[in-house]
Amino acid sequence: MYEPLTEQKAIALAVRLGLFGEDALLSSEEIGDGNLNLVFRIVNERTNDSIIIKQALPYAKVVGESWPLTLKRATIESQALRTFASYVPHYVPKVYYSDETLAITVMEDLSHLHIARRGLIEGKTFPRLSEHIGEFVAKTAFYTSDFGMNQQQKKKLVQQFTNPELCKITEDLVFTDPFFDHDTNNFEAELRADVEQLWQDDVLQRETAKLKRLFLTKADVLLHGDLHTGSIFASDEETKVIDPEFAFYGPIGFDLGQFFANLLLNALSRHERDREPLFAHIENTWDVFTRTFAELWRESNEPYARTCGVLDDIIGDALVEAIGFAGCEVIRRTIGLAHVADLDELPLERRLHAKRHALRLGRELIVQRNTLTIKDLKHLVQQTVHVNS
Ligand SMILES: Nc1ncnc2c1ncn2[C@@H]1O[C@H](COP(=O)(O)OP(=O)(O)O)[C@@H](O)[C@H]1O
Ligand SMILES: CSC[C@H]1O[C@H](OP(=O)(O)O)[C@H](O)[C@@H]1O
Image (tube, rainbow, N blue to C red; front, side, top):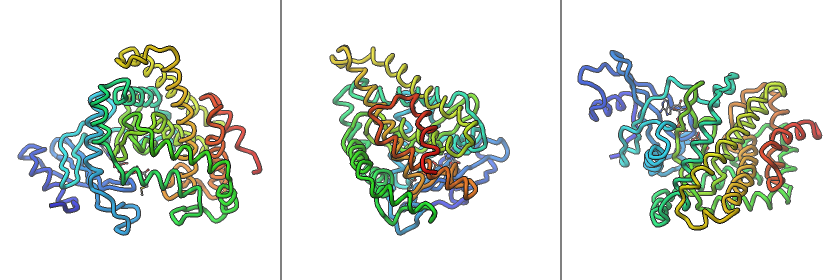
């Protein structure tokens, strides 16, 4: 039977599963700071060995029981971690155990690393973050695509990772609600005029509709589905991606777009002189992604993989998508239901300035996505900073 764990019940579960030695002295702490789930850290105080037990609640934690949410997301998460581990084991936590009924994933404790969002807010640079995320996205995308795996097998994976309830959250919170006067939106009263301008922007809405349609229909690759900087643990040497409960088959540019957007949001939270490391990470992620994907492409059994221009078309589409999806993420993290600490922790005047900037940047990313290069993102940030402010 499903029941939500408490700190004590999490210890009892760890003992029942035999995850520690018999003489272990266990302590437990609920450390979840995300929007949806419980996360318990269990430590053997005698040896300092530790594990993480993550449990889905039957509702969205950030809203409460009025927003019921499938427990199946825990199974999607553990299966996605295992699938990613078969391609990039060094970039995901080890999964020790999972249970569909209890909606739990027991995994490696990564507490020696920093959540990338918090580290970036504190000014850390994580020099290898972009190299690692570029490789993570390229390998998981290629090996789960029709170019990197048996195409019949891929159709089975598409079924396995059909994730309608979690996709619906993204369809609503990323692609729809922020672009209309919807009651999930949440923004400072001082931003109302800027937001109302956005709601009346027909060009923006038409382009966002195209991006939403891609998200709804384009089953390219197995995505993480929520690859923001709060879903990444990092240090100077290591990077680990967590929390793939939104995993599903979607457009190749989506994970890159989420990642770029959250780097851009952190850049906007900083003084102009301190933004360069974020732009460098964006450009390097893209370089590593394209180089790695192109190398893997040579392994493809698809006859069209050897047709001149096909790889360029895929990479070109990925960039246009990534820039457009980044624009949607920038806007929703500014005025939608789920914000980012990078902006929300700024003092009011700086916050309002950064959020107005984010709204303009998000719009231009969406509307101009077909003509921008990766290097243009930095210039776009510079161009959109002072307009009308
Ligand atoms: N494997 C892990 N090791 C250490 N801490 C973790 C691990 N997984 C999650 N956490 C902690 O729990 C927090 C919430 O986890 P997350 O998977 O993002 O939950 P949610 O799905 O609710 O967003 C993370 O920010 C991190 O502090
Ligand atoms: C009501 S869910 C809002 C938001 O939360 C998810 O993020 P996370 O679980 O990492 O905190 C996801 O981004 C959803 O859009």
